[in-house]
Image (cartoon, rainbow, N blue to C red; front, side, top):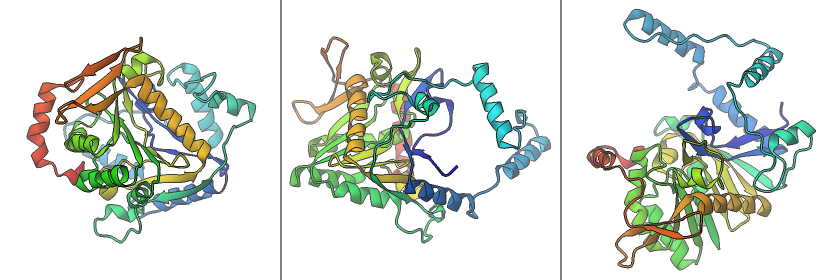
Length: 360
């Protein structure tokens, strides 16, 4: 209703709301009020009204016609939703009561504040102040070669390049390329910036090809002086410190965010990889707020301490070691990549030469 906006990189599916029985994602959203709400609404309208956006009804009609014309699975039937807002709200409430939709209702969040459902129920929302600016790609970006203006990726990389003391990066898919590695090296070795990355491990990623692209640069990133943590699919779940992923599921990272110099932060849909930079349309908000930046750093520390491997160079400097900490605080060192799958690794080696890095 023009009062609040929610933004981040979360997709709308069970696994992004801790409701999937097999794997769930650690994700991050921000709730905002103020002028940024109108900016975000304008971006939505620009995409909604773009000539590149198609009504889903037309796609469903085409799919139904195709299914009727030949063999194939029929489209699943679903009950139509009411046209009015009150009817839709009633249908949603009924789904909640039926138990088919589960929403988390924490007593407190990581920062000691009441859970969001409780805050909305009381009508008192705890917000922290800061100045914010929306960065969004143009819909025209999907047309290669079209004039699309400054991209979110270019603006975000400029923000990162301007770091003076510390840069924290949370990115589930991270493929820096040779230029990105060199930029990290300059930040660390020439300017003394502490660069820290949290991404997915091999066992946690849902995009093995993208992970293989990241793996090409991992050793050089460590040699450049970057600090790397990889979320473990089982440590994140079993520690209980990161989030409740479910008893028999695996944990994955989907948060896309950065904190620069403990003052500015970026939260949005952008991964630091070629696909986000050149193919996908992305959105994010850059915020000047030391308090919010510190909270994002707290999210990282929770995830890294409770459910991630710390990567380090072996003594010979040519290999990587993955270090975990058990529940008693004992260090466990893996000389080989944890949760490795030899058959999947072989498949990736066969596919990699045929998949251009700019598509990852």
